[in-house]
Length: 95
Length: 221
Image (cartoon, rainbow over all chains, first blue to last red):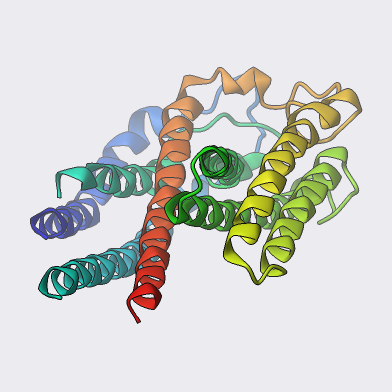
């Protein structure tokens, strides 16, 4: 149980830092590496506008929410099965 | 609880995959454009499927050597999760193909072969459900499972390479070879494969435990 609690807290901290931190790091990257288009293929379309507007982070947030929801669900099923396993073991001992 | 570290690893790797998969710098290539990021989500489905089906085969062989309910249950649950990954792989492949190859289904050798491979595994599910007697069901489906896996490998990795295919890594198509070497892609791709596979193994773990509980409940009643 302790393990899952640590995991939950870790996820929360991570999402919080990502939410706050991403925009600042993005701006820092924008100036140097992110948009330096290689001279060899200058006209290959990439989602640069999306990143300039910062909207790609909305996608990342949505994806993380979906992933987080699914994982929390999986963890809760895991715990329920674990509880059942322990109950069944107790029953067998008592009988 | 000490045995749960790999579940945490799975979560961390998946979070990394989503964040880095969307934000990391990727090679700029015509036609593919940003869809190259599907590499972190479509390909791990197939890698995960192969690895989880391998687990299924291992437990099928274990069942044949040592017929316990546990070996049978794990083999069956792993096969089901492997099939789920395969179905997701083929759907994501079709979606990707629509916008890079022009059609959802272009009868490409890789597409056809993976469809046949999945059909072989659907037959496993049908075969399994057609026995009423537990030991007979477990033994025959374990034997079938070994053959199914042996058929799947050439279907996915050998036959498509003998002809021309649009799919990277097949036929005369250099495909991802040139940028598989790209360390930027590898940095996200390998964690993605491990993360998605561990997620699948986690699901197998929960489903097997639940099924074993159910069996024990019936024994006690």
